[in-house]
Length: 390
Image (cartoon, rainbow, N blue to C red; front, side, top):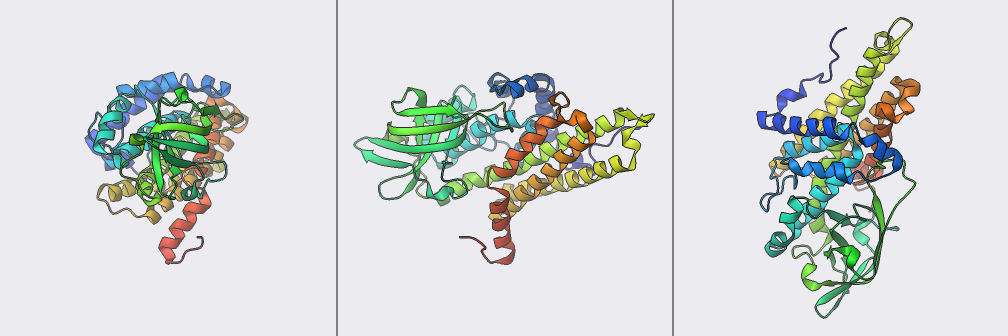
């Protein structure tokens, strides 16, 4: 039997030796530690925190953030981490990404030097986990107009409001809550040890079909007092936050490619090993057509995110490019997951073969960090110069 081709356009050759070495470290952990155990967590809807904490042994926490014990990765290496996490499991990727990308990234980019010194070292060691509370029950895509409020009372801010879909929200030691003060000014407010704060409640959401091994929380804030010093020093408008969201949007594009790669490899190996009518199903034209479509899409996605990472590295990536990458990759990843499920036939709906888990996980990736429609319109505005929405 010929060796199946998993890297049709030699993406590996675009990477430096250090990037490949880091990629291989993450892959070894995900395949050796996470893959044998993750299905049990997924089926129970149980948070795979103990598996995720093993990532602190790798030089990846904090992503591109430099100093304070953070990894200080280049943009391609940071993307490869997300690729490899999602290639095996989307839940672990989200749990780690919320902490390492959103929480650490926000404090690193928008906190004062004192705030970075105060929070980042323990977060970089994953001794204290972070969460990022922006989305609200009535504010998803319209995130700039949050309804959560923060009013100044002496040396404190008092927070009131609700947040929804907050990854790590039930376990985090540090939660960045986004709110508006009495003057309407947007800002980030850091809750330390939130479960010990009077008026704070976080409830794990149930009934999810995607990323079941990580919990998202519904958070309620009722007269929650935090020190005034916990307001992020370098954020005074939603525009300040968009720099953080730009990095995470690129990260979700890499996640989508990782999911597509996982689906393609599962389907390819299954098709080469599964025999029907006396020969491997990979020898049938209809199966080959599906595999070729997946291989072509994967190669395009890999090249797209690699180029985007280089643009981010030199500081020239635009919001339209970021949205186009996320939108394009998530659409193609969704198609790859569907084709993998088809190729596996009835076995494709069993989590034992892993494709079913990735099939559901890609549905979350398709929507978060901007829905498909919003990202499409941001890209369309940049391409045409004409805005199709407010």
